[in-house]
Image (tube, rainbow, N blue to C red; front, side, top):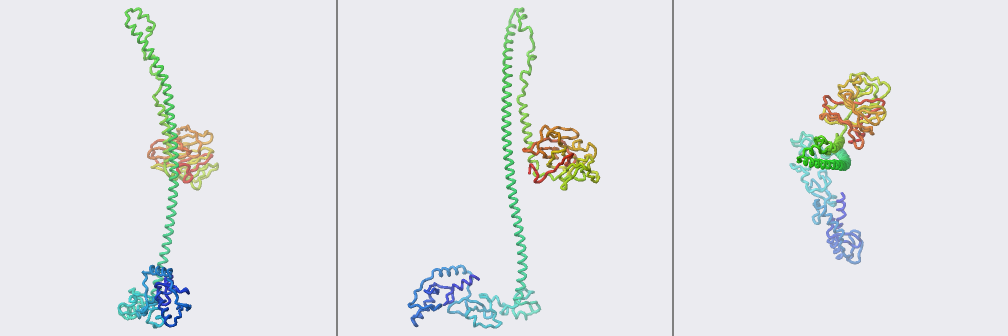
Length: 527
């Protein structure tokens, strides 16, 4: 061990112990002050010739002893760091304590290098590393050295224990063999622990990566929500300015109009007052001829028959302006509702067993493409005889859901939802041409306009459509089926309101075009 090697370097060559008050001679060798003083005193008495006891370098005068402060600090530091380590000294070195290098279990003594050379080499004298607890290595009953291991009782025993009745028929092994077996078991167990620790480290690493990914996703979602609400606040502020401006414009327009009406009514009121005064004067006259011949009273009529409510100018007190504002707010809140309609799109897959023979369904069951050739699909009870139509595998009988589609600019498309009991043949089976389906459709020649249809009743939408992506939102319990244009901002197109009586399936109709059901990362809005 490194500490043991350092301990050897810190020993005085005279007393073979750790330096005590180390000093240095001119030749560079170090000794304990007491040790080197004792040797120099002997040299002074015998020959008055001084020399280093280690390298025999001679000095003309008794050398001055210089304290080695660095070595002193090293020894002190070594002693402080090894104060818990018991230093075992040779049992036979009485005059000066010398560290032991081996211990004899038979003699129960510790030996330095010098005494180890003359120690008995007999087999009974078992040597071990220096130890102060030699009694623990002997049998507590027979006081003999422990040499065997009883596998049944799992204890170490001596030679005499083998003769006892207690261990006579037990399986015993030498300490070395038993130790090797135990080391092998511990090695196998250590290998299992190592494997388990590696798996645990892999699991920790996987969880750390998962946590990091979750944190990154959370940061991304926070940024997305922050941007969304920033945009909403901007739009609300713009809306507030528009509404306040409209209110101010309506108020100014109404005020000017009412000022004209009030002015006309004031003129009329003054005219009526004049007539009233003239009539009162005539009523007070006593000459009947004057009363009858007065030109202003020749044609008397009911004042209410002359003007009535038309003099108010037809104003309704601003209700029309408030109604306009109400419509604007309604559109805005419908758009916000569409934005937060659901966090994830419904997983819509087309049922290939319902697809008409002119529809080619993609392998991922997300795209329906019109083809001129007949697909010659196997006839099933669910298949539409109308060659252009298909519906989804999944139906919804509760909750709120939405799904998005992308329509090709060419051809004609219809998209919507239907009951599973919809007819599979005839014109009445087309989406919107019966009371079991609701649809949005448009295409070439429509001048960028779409229509919605239910039970053959068609409603032309007033908006021009510029996007090729649409959202269909279902609130089953509320009985609402809504269609939105996925533009920026999202725009509400139409909402059907009814009471649903069957599960609703997604449905589409394609002619000379294709429709793709969007999902996941392909979402344009709400992703």
